[in-house]
Image 1 (cartoon, helix red, strand yellow):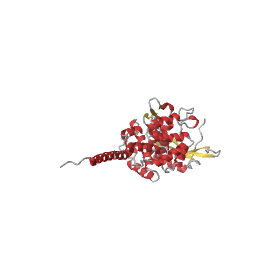
Image 2 (image 1 turned 60 degrees about the horizontal axis):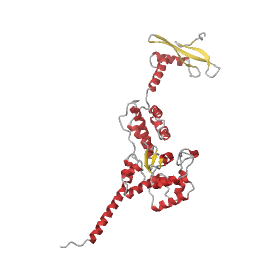
Image 3 (image 1 turned 90 degrees about the horizontal axis):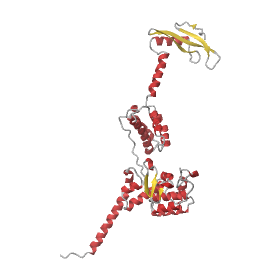
Image 4 (image 1 turned 60 degrees about the vertical axis):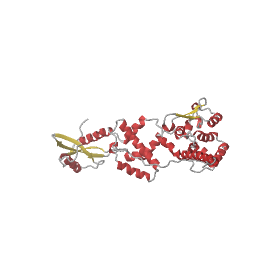
Length: 381
């Protein structure tokens, strides 16, 4: 291909060729500059007449700046961009660590929720930073900003996810560990729900009246066994061991599988519960694992006149735990096992009920001895 004709300009070292405009058939000038740097002759493009608003005078100024070292050559600029890209590729930013974390934990529980937390809060504020560039003050500022519109529990979960990502990178030697601990805000939202005897009686009345056997029996199971909603959704008939008297609990709150006793009330309920063509005890649509039953259980709750803030299934789990603790017949360690709590501190919310039962038992002993003391004959002088 023949070389294109060069047109000189009035400026030394500046020439142009004629070419077609970008996206247009109209001709435009393409300016080039020539200069010598470190003993080498350099020819490079300065810009296009219309696209870059380039002129011979502007090209001449660019040439002078590059001769004087005030501006890098095109080649040097390309090399800098390539070097930066190579460096960035080796940087383990929070964004990159998050992608690697997801790849290594494809089936982790709650990933969809974590995806939302990362995308809505972490990515825009810390995504492009490496863990070593995180500052406690920056994190504290964002925490305060989030607390203006979000609950302490939500903010705690966001920061916990950030901490998890950073720890994942350090544990797998992808990046250095940070030299401070990401502090989580205190959350005081432990709610222990309870029902009076009258409320329980009304609830059972509405449960027996309701036509939805799945919702009714799930509410009974929550009361009889203290099982969580998600555990009942996952419950399969193969997990119900009638012969050994236990129920296998799959993946309780992300922990190892556990089991709880199949007491007489739960045994009778499950024995009479209808079996569909599904492996699940409480199946959802088309026999698949159930994902929701909120509307059905809330309808029963409202019919029984229970408080609006009472949670129809999780609240019944609290009722189960409260009744056992207040009976004085169940130790807190045993209650922890029945509730499949990984952390004993979770069970401590019921400690005051257990203490009250112990006090009442002690008062019974005192009353008995006082009665005996009244009937004893006086000791002769």
